[in-house]
Length: 188
Image (cartoon, rainbow, N blue to C red; front, side, top):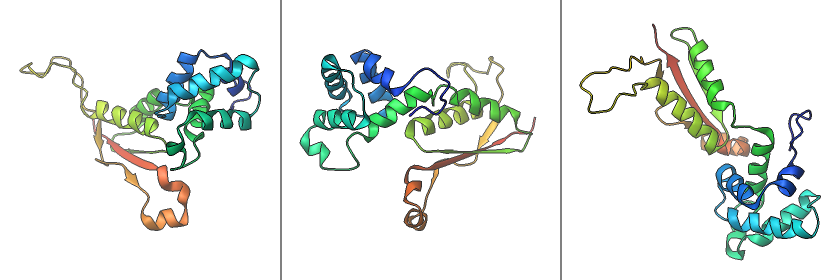
């Protein structure tokens, strides 16, 4: 799961070293897993007897923590947890807000930024950055005039994100989670 092999944090350390509470937060927030607490408790129980060494072992622990009816539907029950661990290990969301904000500000007037996201957490960050740069005023709604002095920097082109069509999904099922958002830098 480690993209940058020079970074000391590994999935092994997250699984075997993080507190149960922190594990549950990561699984819930990054994996959007509704059984996060159950999974974190199952991991904690298993690692008390011996460290969790393999992905197969972890996968089985996760599967056993999820109620049987929920395991029968959808993708593999460990998918969201593995995604959450990967996001934590790689710090995938840590710099996204700053990167998108900086990229927008480096655009020439009239330039367009297009961002493709593959996860709802990423999409939410991009959407919020675009909205903040389109409506930057921080004055209270009751103020008769703007006193903060912040000016609109972007115009959002895609009110809703663009997603793959049925034909595209048939040709490339992996495009299922892709969302495209675009905005234009205003002339200043």
